[in-house]
Length: 247
Image 1: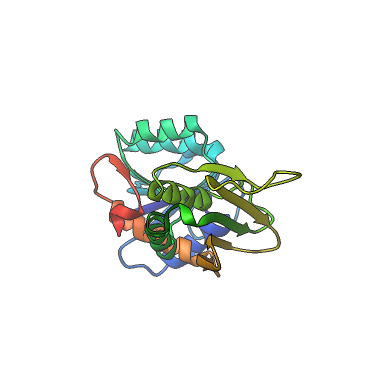
Image 2: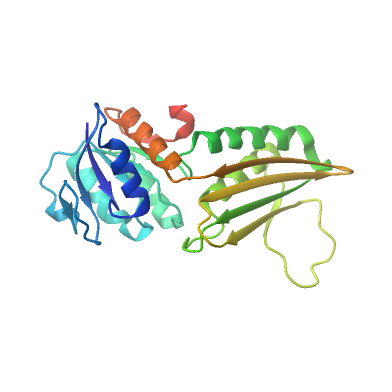
């Protein structure tokens, strides 16, 4: 399987490349990145320069690059794994359109543990009902641009699914906000240092608190998930896929 890494010179791209160096079933044939870095494979500034045959693209770049990468994938009829977050509503519609022509794997988090957490949160929200207040706290490094994180939004959707979408999402609190309403779902973002990614969903009831949390200690966990997704996606028919399909 021939892999192209979009954002190969970034932290995630580097982790994916390193994990694939000795892989027997997948080979990185090139990368696309505006940042130039000496690697044993070609790194192009644009998809227009790519000459190699590509089976799967793994994209960990920026939503700003979405159109370029989708046009290339549609033209070459290759699969694509989207690990980027912060997409707009227009971006999501464009991704959905592309999935009618090519296989697209999109998820807010490629960690197996986080996707198990999503399942547990949905079950807990349904089981505990409206007797428990629910708050989501996410923590990331100081270079992350979007807030709340895509994973926090994914967990918020899991809560909403469990509670029949009856909650009003509140992003942070400031000033005289009054007593917390039972129908609120609090979502809070923390940024600092080199935190890879931490997510916590707290269910606070009368005299007891249940917490479901996940902590990523290295970006390798996401890189490994991206590679697993790419291998699984190769050869699939056009459509939209996610971690639930893979697992």
